[in-house]
Image (cartoon, rainbow, N blue to C red):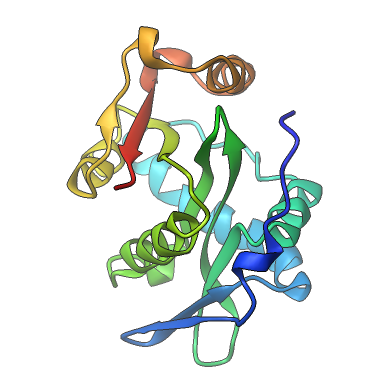
Length: 187
């Protein structure tokens, strides 16, 4: 696992981003136990496309590390309950999106875009040269959505050592033939 660096000085004042009927903010410790349900709910959509889901969710200890590093954001409803989240960490000198999930009942409301935009604004101030992620190529809404946000698919020769190790680790529980790595440069 990649060691995550702390950059708390960048986040002196908590910021809140509003969009429609939800708010995006940095995650809090009390949010972490609720994120697995959001992730599972989001993954229900995959079954419509015959993509096996399983019960794999991000480990709470990884989420806690992301939170401590100010690299975990949640979209909350009017009751301050998480309906979506995005989190990541440093890989190969870039910011890597480990997960972006929006609960099934909250999808198609712009929450994913708002989460991505908030993350990009915050990590852009930290000096990361690029954002990377891995995603499913088969689902009609994954790779195309990232492409609309400016991400490009990486060729094998362009994948860094740490990202290659992460992809290898992912292949233990995800079909590597349906996955790709993507990158967006931050200017």
